[in-house]
Length: 140
Image (tube, rainbow, N blue to C red; front, side):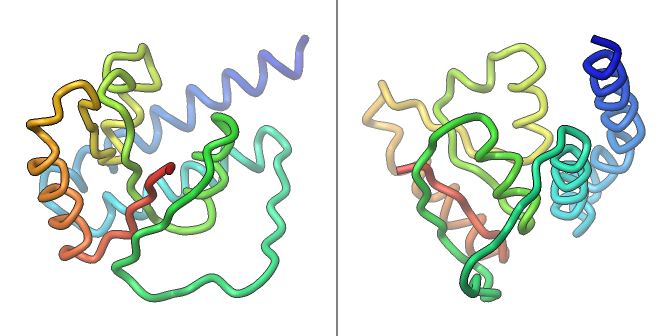
């Protein structure tokens, strides 16, 4: 029980320490906005005891569109810990307490799956991110 409390407290402190840097990166369109979430997830994985072992060679080319199978919430932490990425998520995630806010800070692209007429806008946003050099993760 004490370990859970310490992990939660460390998570909160980590979030509060890195938050101003991420906000500055977002406000001034700095590269920092890509590296802070990457660092955040690396520390978070270490904090909760997730050891990441990569098998094979990952492409270092950017931009990249990464298609992944979504198994659990841990996928996001692990993928982001490996490389600076942005995610594509359903629009409902943006309204989730805490996690929606964190997703917005990571520059997640939100897709309204119910509004088919917005598909073009979503595609343009993904294309814009790719053109700006981001690696975009899409859970197929």
